[in-house]
Image (cartoon, rainbow, N blue to C red; front, side):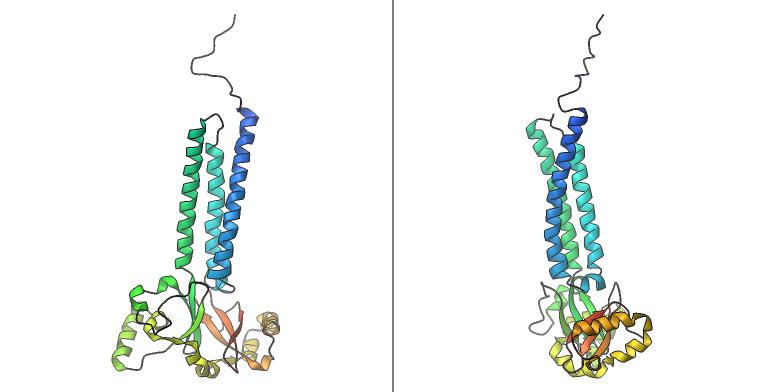
Length: 270
């Protein structure tokens, strides 16, 4: 005697089982490929323009970008794997996929905005060192006090400038007060000057590279490699420390014209 199927059970559909799983995996794979292509374009902009080497390491841009992209690459295709089902009406399936794509693009846009705000905009010479300034460190109202030519933050990679400590008594007091509030001189646009104004001070303050080599024997090979990459005699290369939020590095400068000719991935205070 045959038993009639339960009213709530329609039996396996044409896309159930292995076939349904294959279609889901195929859809998720296509989504992953599209996501990877978009991530590649974003990487070209973020790591090639906003965070050029070595600032992707100094400012932590590489880690921040990889975290953002990893989440985006994993979650989008996984959600597609969960919602894709050819048994759904086409209008419903299209709506579900559109929602997934919109959510993923929204997350990507927010991540890119975060990376944009944290991007390095200036390497600032300050007394006897360089400081890295990020866009997020600068108040828009303060930016209007910068000299002409420095009132707009760079959009295509960081520039090099100097911070001129104030000399007027009232400005000194205000600057100290702001520094105590976490707004150091190098993030006060009013103190910014073109790097050309700092050349003599850089040459005077920079130390011979041989001093760094003696103080950091464990990094001798890295120093030699940086000298070769600079293409200058070692006697012509001096160095200054770089201070940043994520890591401390060393800037190599030509002691004839104060150009920055290389970087070393370790602290420069002996």
